[in-house]
Length: 288
Image (cartoon, rainbow, N blue to C red; front, top):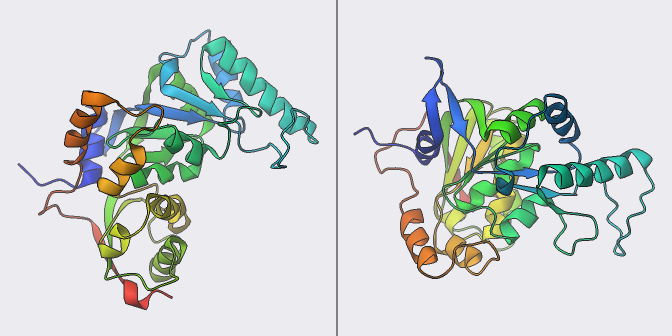
């Protein structure tokens, strides 16, 4: 059997079927995170077509794009357009049965922080959302990517997307990061080396000692910012740091299910002899 990259394992395990010989597949999506900014037309499209959301329990809606960030939260918003987007999201979630972290919910926050905090994102999952920084979830060993409004509608109705496979890139950060060097420094070093479009058309797997020593939050930063190099996906193989981060999260598996899940998640890594389309080496000692 041909050795596989972690990206190939993610996509192969979620492909319903191939659609052509050009890399297009019908891809099953485990979960979707929805916000008020990119979802309005999707819900309107469902309503106009008289369609329901097929699996509402797989979606989580979070207000996070247009709301004020003042410490004292209130439903009053200075921008009328933003206020309508927030209220329309609430109306849509109520009608279609989707859980919502509204503006006054204590769990509300930045969607790509909220979802991991809740244990809504788990290793091995494929996640899509109407935001380019959905790549953040790759830090947990999942595969996340951003989609447009029409795709959000299709996903809500079918739990699938038409997806074109990406090329694979491995970025190895060798050696220990120097004191004071952050995850952002690492990803900026990558952008400096390959350019702002250097990862266009690629899914990036990050690995190496420099990645291993980062916290889960630091890894989220790298996966979040990989889009600044043009990547459509970014991730790391999950390890004990990830498992410790997820354990006891509200929606993480419990008891024997947790034990069984971790045993499966430990297998989520690229095969030793897997071949990547492009390899990039970063020396931690040279990152400043």
